[in-house]
Image (cartoon, rainbow, N blue to C red):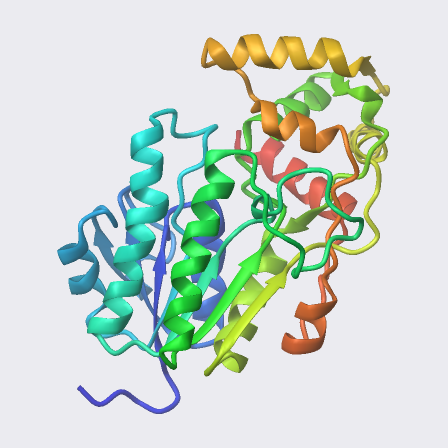
Length: 326
């Protein structure tokens, strides 16, 4: 079917998730036609403007059917360890699901793909700020899965498709659902102590969810051929302690911070993780105990992208959403 030249049709996988919902809304603002894919129900807001396919990206036939009338795919769907404890299921979503998306791009003649990867492909103890061309040494299954996904995406680009691989750190902002950050916001709201491993003296770079959505739109507009691999991360990164102090100040609460020495924090997180009740995975603790900052100049130069929100502004917006909606 011939499509109007001014309206491309974009498939968004994981459209019911945190990032996916923001991406859908941003695409609609840009007058794209949107097809959403998710195993979960799609939120009622904006439902009338989105063609929604509910199903599992592990099912290739379903994926091909949902993508059959698309011009591009934004692949946000992923399984993180803090939400999916079954490692086999996590692998199926992250690797087999990505393979199915790529096969659908080939079979349906979809010429553009934006793949949401992660800075977890780098591992820990990385250069600061870390550029895109360092060796990838992931230390957890999620990072390993993203490396596999990137490899398949690079192969797709080599066949002539336009592929953008975007590597965000922790995504923050309105709608935040990361367990560790939710626990922090809950503590601030209730005026209780916020526990900071290592005292929160390190810089843990994040990025606002709306800035990631904008990077995706720019990728669709500019990466029509070839390959882009780019970090999408904030500017002017504060320490974790500075971020938490800013939240207490914004909330009008007395600052309460409980510093936990790194060895004790490791023992606690390891035990809670084994019990399946830890809000923080062991590898994420190690990330929080070192400076974790990434060079975002490639995205700026190639896409013309610039993060609008700094980490403190994004955290405050996340907190405001939290107290109004939770």
